[in-house]
Image 1: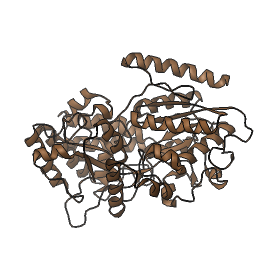
Image 2 (image 1 turned 90 degrees about the vertical axis):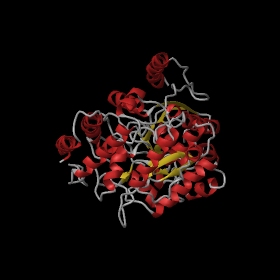
Image 3 (image 1 turned 30 degrees about the vertical axis):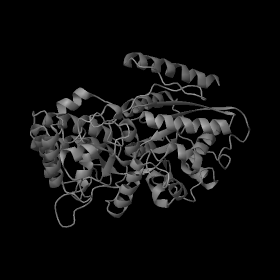
Image 4 (image 1 turned 120 degrees about the vertical axis):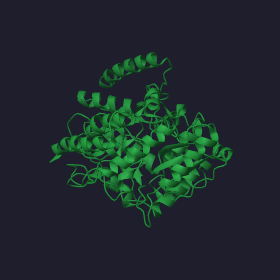
Length: 485
């Protein structure tokens, strides 16, 4: 208990400073022993693409199997204190906290503390905690970071918890587990919290006011450009919200050209033709210069705003980029306006590569240094999020379509209209998708933070040609990735 308190006090101090800086009230945990101030992110969210620092190393231990079943508490019945951490919108925070409180009600010997933040703040905090050896036991993880964390021995394999039934996967197709299997021995380091895909969320009323027809799911980039231009001209507003320059959109663009951003070995870029990079940024710069989408200067001036402050929610643009699971939070922030969701446009051609792919929205992982009794509880919580119907009524697929078929069937008739559209989009993409790439390699964050973003800024500020930026991106990215050889 004293160890937990020693960890908690500095966290609460940090939280207080953050709250003071933001001038807003903290969001305390209820039922647990505390929480952290809520901060949401759209542009920096992994569901819309992300930037965050690399992690530092820490010790690794094998998982110790705990008791089976939900609500099992601990085998000894002794009090267990454990930390849980995640990122997301206020909508996600509220749902997650409610489920954790339900777990504690069923397991009175378990006391949970939690912390949550916007995506960038989340990874900055975890980096500090990893360096100090005091990571929370149960953490939300992201597909683009998971490979690096496993390589650094920061996560605990979960295979034994699956084998002993603590984490029940009988209703989960193996395909949904593959994203969490990593390393040379293909161990399971993470359980997906849902499935999603890249999407474009539209405000149907704004489109109707503009007299612009909603797109077909197989629309092309040429049709997309025509559409956002019409929306801009008719509404006198942006035709599209921010973040089209996000690295996740560029990754999709590369896939649509039959390549990958990174090679299979993670030692270099995965595409050979720099024209892919040049065409992407020429397209974006042209739209920005015409005022069809926000300029890079505008994006920077907006900062790391939450979904609630996205210009789409403020009805200053009729369409935004997000991952499909985010429609729940967007719909909530938009006050119930009617929304629709579509896949990204495709390249021109007879049989264009879809580009859209199905990915784990985020994972639950147990950190490597987590003590046995806390790890046992963390595994039980993973099982609740994966299989418990009552808990999933609360979670409402906010993190994406659940991986358990039983939960999917349970939720289908219950989800709201916005979420139903996300289910329908996933069903379409299941039939028209590109293959999921391997997790991003180590140093991929440096590639984005130190090469992609600075060069992107120079191009979109008009200080460098896309051709020169493409050449420099290749040189800088390959130099960083060569460390993986």
